[in-house]
Figure: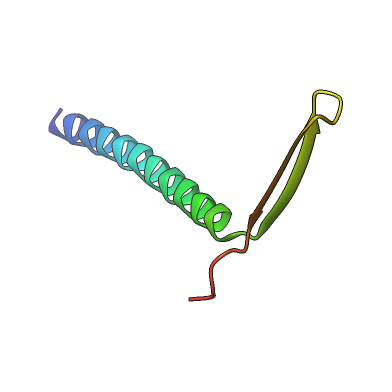
Length: 65
């Protein structure tokens, strides 16, 4: 009987560990994507309202680390 209880505890612990591992890796992935977007060079322009409003933006990016 003790073996079943210990085995169940191990399974519960492994499930929690797996859950936290997936959450942690997803968090790191989101942070890396956000950092890459922050460092990206972007040039964009848009026109709306029958070309009456023109928006032009430019981000030269950051120098390499």
